[in-house]
Image (cartoon, rainbow, N blue to C red; front, side, top):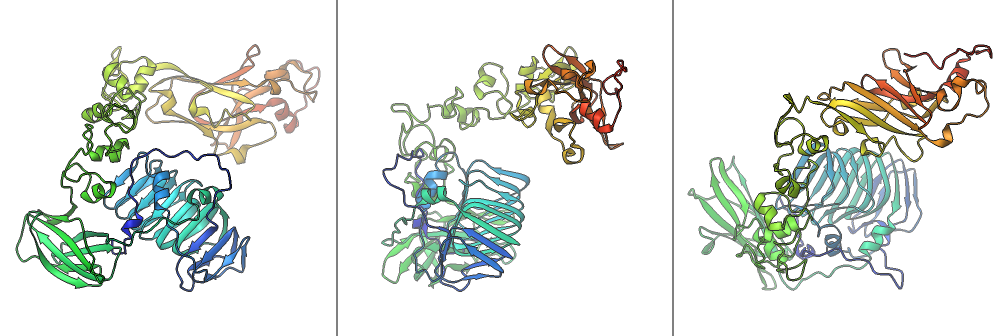
Length: 634
């Protein structure tokens, strides 16, 4: 792990600050000029294995461009052997993406799940590996490699960054946007379906393999990063050391990354973290393997480099601890505040003081959770300690949240719909458990339904089984995909059921839409899905028909009363067993322009214009047939 060269000075210290507002520009900002840039001088530094390639923007490399495409179009400049220096933007990336709440991991971070939503930035001091349906709406940054497997999608203002390693994306479907940045490594993308709508890709080498490639320049991201490189400090040696233990060989490996790779490296060990002795010296390399002859409880390991110039640099020690299964390698945290010394030195806090600014919050709490400044006592509100402010505005101070083990960055720790403050001081529920009385209905739903969140039964019936009349209003979020501005009606649902209907029902566009769509259908069809724990006694679908769809123009049956206004509409259900749309008993309220149907269960529903339906079926209704009803009732 961590065998690649680490340019530590390029990883700028992430001091807590607010995202700056971009002032009005007196002149056009300098933009990064390329869709793709590869800094390597090798042949094939940019390699694109595709049948057809269209790049709307400029590409450049210090090496050559290699492609298998029969059609390779660049609507911009195409530059080989560019002799351009790599641009570094770590400060800008940190300021834009990694100053608000960040999920920080001090070693590797791996996650495999069906759906992975990266809404909060992820930063790891090792590798990041994600496998699943990955949706990145913010940023991910690894010190070493980023490996993404599964379906990947990210918007144009997100970033995928590997500071010293590679970015590897290997999957079937990729919608890639934003900034993909691996200045010291390779960006390697393999996909069956690759959509690059708005992107900038910067790496030492770039390899893309897909059937067809269309890439468009991201002007917004280009303006954010600009075309100037951040300065690199070459005056001092920056060296970071890590360890690894092999249980089979019982050998230790030490790896280090340094800004000056040529020199002599003295590996030293200590029993107490103060008195060190040399256990080996190597030259011009980045690793060392050794074994201890005697068992031990704890040892501290560090590396001291003497460069050929005579300058000396020393790494922060890491710790080797004896366990039942051999030895574990841990980062050094001298003050045991949760923030490793390597991070404390990076951001300027005192590694021997848990609370550098004496504001009541540990450096770790401020850096990882509240994003207040661990170097300033009152970094948010002058005269008020960062411990006493209320970061998430839920009524609880930061220190109160830490004391109660609630989250200071979100007002609803257990995501039950009640704020942490209300749970503690209003409802006397547990802010850490969504269902305080463990009755199957979460606390927020019980309050909404008029139940007692601290009593698992109502009138002798368990709350999870207690049936309550409920209305899902037209403006409910679960009806948002149906009740669009373009829809000819607004749907609401009256239901008698157990549980919180808005959490037990899902309403979305029907999977049968393409198969059952026809000219007589008013609007789109939709599916109603009900969870296994929900047992409704009654479901009424209510459609408020919009004014512009009520009056029918003169047509075949427009003179008949039963086809006037909303009376010509009926609720239909798609029956899978017979593969047919059939009408349901429909009731009408001409005063409110509402039609409704009492349905038994979930399924696929729609509204049909029966005037058009009869006409399309070729039904002949004589003018004397005054008793003819609207469609037969199913």
